[in-house]
Length: 375
Image 1 (cartoon, helix red, strand yellow):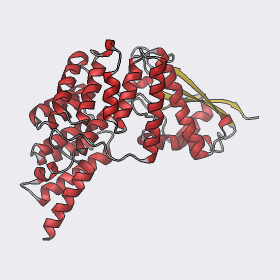
Image 2 (tube, one colour; image 1 turned 45 degrees about the vertical axis):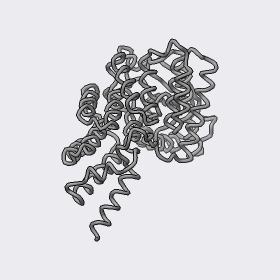
Image 3 (cartoon, one colour; image 1 turned 90 degrees about the vertical axis):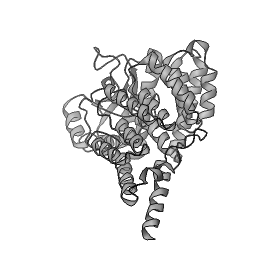
Image 4 (cartoon, one colour; image 1 turned 120 degrees about the horizontal axis):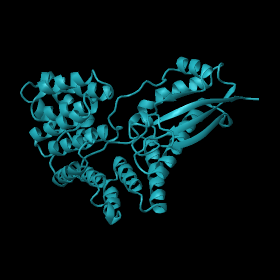
């Protein structure tokens, strides 16, 4: 009796926290958003609506609006945005990929997979696209092809923890719980998504141990949240590239800013928006502590946003300024920093850190520069 209750509890937990494959007629559930997330998405959506009105020929505006609508749980509206986009965008690989992801969220895995395959034929080197294709194939129960898609994503972005997490989930759904557990244990050794991977790992172990012959069956009885979470996990990541060393800890920030004019910090934003990712808040907390420390509290600073060269110059200039302002808003809200101490600038792609690789992730950063002393 006790064991039965444990299995039921594990099954409910899996359904709530992971979800699983469901029938093709069921839409993907993106989960419940917090008030902060809802507000952030409202702001992002309003921005892209305004940008699209002002620049109807800007494909990044269409993509940004559709993505944020989809991420906020408004997939039907995202579909309408893509449907009504200018005709010249219809064959663009990025539009096809976004259409495919929208169809996945709406439960049409067949259309979603077809669109993603067409997008892959045009783009070819986007690892996030192949991870999304793997999710579409998982949704259809085509686990062998799904694993091949995840392997392709890992070829393009080796050791990515989010893709390895999705691969482990696929293996679990296909009845290979032992392989899934090994994959997630390996994923934990990589960088990022540790909390989600560890949660999945523990739940898979519980399912296997409590019901050795039916663990995958219990996982499949859950909802579809696992697929939406897997799509979001890779979809909102930056392009795959080696990460340079950034200044992250408060004492180091204080020391460097006291001696040198500027430092670079890595601030993670949601894709194509100025929404701060939760994992970046620790770095901003350290920055706030540094700027309010005794050694630096008597100085003014500039927060400068920088982008890579993907997209138009005007779009990147606007995005970099909005991101710098988002950092400023966080700092003055949580650390009560006098706004007159901080200047904000957005330089877009005009000051690339690595001009030889203009589309590299290394170019996307926030630069903190010490200015003059306060009178």
